[in-house]
Amino acid sequence: MPAVKAAKPNEIFTREEWAALTRVSRWHGLWLTLHGWLMVALATGGTALLWQWHWLAGLIATPVALVLVGGRQLWLSILMHEAAHGLLHPRRKTNNFAGQWLTGSATGSDLHSYRAYHLTHHRFTQQTEDPDLGLSAAFPTSKASMRRKIIRDLTGQTFLKQRGNQFASRGKVCRRCCPVPRTLLPRPNAITRPVLRSTATAQPESPLRWSISKARNEPPEPSGASC
Image (tube, rainbow, N blue to C red; front, side):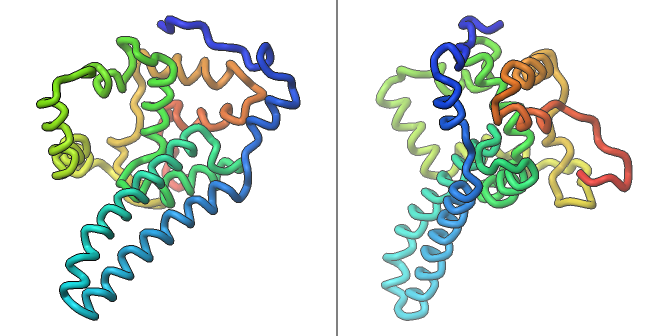
């Protein structure tokens, strides 16, 4: 259960202030998404050209490109987080498309699964029900432990551990859309269902309300229907 009662925005902000704070731009999120992919294209394309020019130049540029591309992957993952809250674009279909294919795809992430997971984290932050509790429970930690964590991150071990099950999945796919295994979609459980239901109705004036509907563990639609 939540340990802290949620704040009511109308007790802190005026109606005009809250409207300004929650207004979602039609272009800013899309521009940031495009900017991220442009940086990836410049880093990878530029490095490829340097390899063709001289092997030593390509060798020097490659680690720089890896850092730049990794940074843009983080950039796009952050934008997927915004899409999970319905803040990347005011139009639902555009927001979900950008969150799924233009940002989440950069790291092999599924927007709808992440949304259900992440909203549960917001509901139960730092409580036993928090699915992200394992990320912070080990801290503070020793220098030796921190050193091992950094090595695992830099060598890709953390990524393989977190995404191994996803890559091994052989779930059914939605043929009308793209190959997102249904085993990756959220499944009903005692925590996420009431969390998502209450969050969707708590602030009807909020632009986040519609972003919850796709995380409600809806059953697969009948054959012939779109996803």
